[in-house]
Every structure is written in structure tokens, then in C-alpha cells.
Length: 317
Image (cartoon, rainbow, N blue to C red; front, side):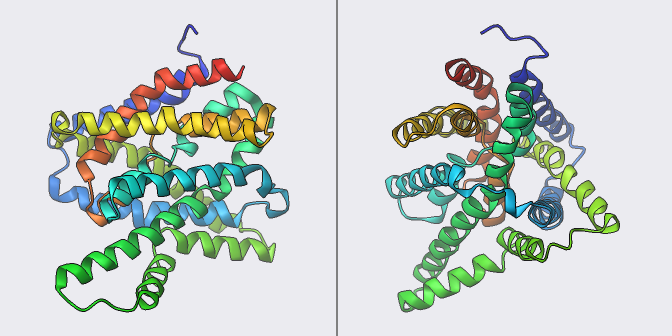
């Protein structure tokens, strides 16, 4: 498939590569000090993501959500997450890496790509998937990571193990009162009221949410500038292949096995073929797990997706 600059794949993916590249140059030029990266991560994670997730859920048209059409997507992603977690070992670092292999950049790349490739009908399917994307995958990952972190802290402190029920209860509590699930739950509950958001509230939330993608990707580039990619390129390549090759293949096989065809199948597979989402980078920063490896994976998967996404589109055509 010949690619031109107005091709859907390049139109969606090149801005991501450019933003990461800008951040890389900024980092190399030392325009942002290393100490400031953590503060910027907090800005993105604790402010921009909050606005994005709350607004997305608060303005969702719940009566239009066809949960059955996306249930299979999340079953496949969840099973892949758990399988990778057990293969790599039951620890919080493995959980972050497993999340990287299943969490797609559906907003910044997926929306323009599906719109250009499949039009408004494709966007309806994608928005249904996106509306539950963070709620299902990030909440699952948060609960698992919090549970594993609690277990690791007990082991490191030499304290006697608490009853498994108490550990699970504490992990679930930490997961609910967490910067990711909390605004999703709050937005969902607000959407149930049917009141809608007044423009005075909705517009600032939209501006903050729109800033999430660009700022997060520039921050990936800044972090990448201080990362020894040579030491992580094999791991980053493996995660990128799992994300952009294995994930969509499993999604396609599951779709065919359960009778999903046409546009719903195409959107499922294309969404699964997208590169690693920036939220995974923020998770690694927050928990201080595999930060350099995840940073490299976000960048490498964006480049690999320039090859794998066109292949997926051609096969689905």
C-alpha cells in the first residue's frame, strides 16, 4: 500500500512522531530540567487527565452505548493482560509492561485515523469503545498494580502478611480513590443525572483535556532524551510487537470466532493495532516501574505502527 502525506495512517501517526521528536530536542537542549519532569508528569496525570476522563464520561450518551459490541474487545485485552502478567511474573513492574501491550492510543491517533478511513459510522463504533477504554483497562490495571504493590511493600518491610481479604480491600480502596478511576466514576454518575455540562464548565474541561495528548507526548520525548535507548531497544521492540502485531491478530481471531464482521470488526482490529498510549507512560512514572523501557516503547511502537496499521487496513479492506 503506497503511502502519501494525506493518507489516514500518516495523517494520524506523523503528528505523534513529531511531538515526541520536539520533546526529545527540548530534552537534549536542556530546556526542561530533569527535576521538572516529575512535576510535569503530575500536571498531566493529576490535572489534564482528570479533566479529559471526567468530561468524556460526563458528556457520554449512555443510551447510545452498545456495550455488547465492545465487550469482546475488552475480554481479549483483559485476558492478554493477565496472560502477560503471569508469563513475566506477578509483580507491579510486569503489570505496567502488560498494560503497555494492550493499551492503545485511541484518542490522539485512533480518532483521526478511523474518521479518515471509515467516516462517521466508524467513529460511532470507536467512540463506544473509547467511552469504556479507560474505565475498563485502566481500572483493571490500577486494581492489579495496587494489589501487587501492597504485597511487595509487605514483603519488603518484613511485616507479617495481612489476610488476603484485607489486602484486596486496601488495594481496591486505593484503586477507587486514584487519579484515573475516580474521575471516570464521578463522570459516569454525573452522566446518569442527564443534566449535561454547562459551557462555563465544559469548555475549560475540554481545553484541559485537549492539552493532554500533546503535552504527554512532548513529555515522552523529554524523558526519551535522558533514556539510554540502546539498553532498552530489545525490550521496547518486544512490547511494540506485542502491541501492534499480536494484539490485533488476537482481536481479529476472536472477532471471527464470535461472528463479528464488517465495520465493528475493522474498528476493533485497527484500535488494537495502534501504538502504546501515553497513559501507560504516566502509569510507569507514577509507580516508578520500568520508566525508561515504557518511554522507549511508546516511541518505538509509534514508528512500527507506520508499517503495521497500513497492513491491518489493507487486510480489512
